[in-house]
Length: 169
Image (cartoon, rainbow, N blue to C red):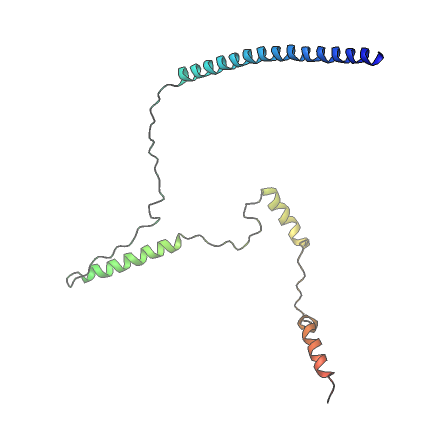
């Protein structure tokens, strides 16, 4: 008897849980429908705003001055030489040499000191001038002494040792 009453109580409890679950599902469906309608309305409003904002603007092509295809110096074009214009020949050779020299002078000169290519401030220059006589500068030690140990080859030494100590038959 006690088992039957406990069974009825459990069944009633499970039925109430199921009924509450169904109610919550119906509420969620209603909220979902409202949310979908609101989302669709927002999308429609945004698309209308975009259509109203989009106004045809003609694209204006801008012409910029570029120099990438122009030569840095004038190119030499030889003039055909005939018998009558010998003086022009020498003038052309002198002009060609002048243009060649101008091109070679336009090349960048290599930097000998790669430490700091920037110009130091005036204060730094004066401080260096003040401290130059004190010889504070650090110079890396230069080892010019050549030791025999630098040329020692341990592998070769083992081979020669094995050759010298081999037994004589």
